[in-house]
Image (tube, one colour):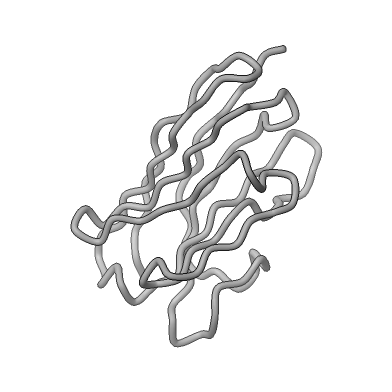
Length: 126
């Protein structure tokens, strides 16, 4: 399986920005669709964004559409999540995940992803 390591979390004020990174290693990066998910205390893990193996297709949760942008850099084997206009309700642990292209298309379903990072905390103050 591909190994994933997130970075870039931290504390931001409402209206501010953060950029998360997820470095992949161990497998061919282009063989994976990539996704970002988040989990707030006491809540289930929820979909944030996903990007196809070549970067041509991206999908977002309605709650982040227009504020967040997912991208990937094949030369760096890294997927990014640019988060703008942050809100306190964006506070959560953010996880990146990989889904092998052999398993199907990009999806919002976390059960469909077979590799996960350890997560990075994002806290947005009001």
